[in-house]
Length: 191
Image 1 (tube, rainbow, N blue to C red):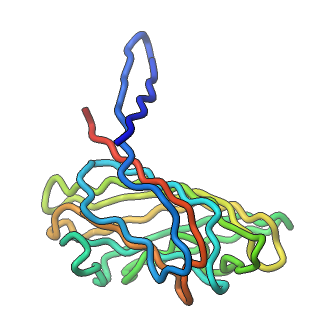
Image 2 (spheres, one colour; image 1 turned 90 degrees about the vertical axis):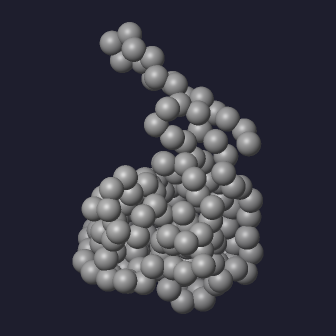
């Protein structure tokens, strides 16, 4: 594992945290992109050159048993805001969802061969107590049909603290496969 140590200094106090590479690579014509065996408290996922096989929405599921099952209860919440190059904007949110939408509901990611999505997602996977929620947020850009580019950001949570720590995430399209995608997942702890 390669370590990157970003540091910051505020009022003369320096903080250095090791960011460890958890996974990296690419997929093509894949139904899902899954990461299991997550052990770090905080994760950062980078996606680029991401192209769906058909125009659709990117979705997230969480696992609490290392990917044996994916939570499909109604305890997922998300909100997304995005802006179009034509000056238009929109927002979407849903409470009690069975999956988390990471990209806007209104405009799907296009599937043209020259188009792609870039995205960053950060999340805290630890449920320190039975009542703690897991939170994450996303930001990125993509091209929907007719407007290039669209920028978006969103936040999500799962409120099922009783399931324990999240140890797996799965990305999939609302319809069709992931035609291609490059990814890199980092992880780090508080100390």
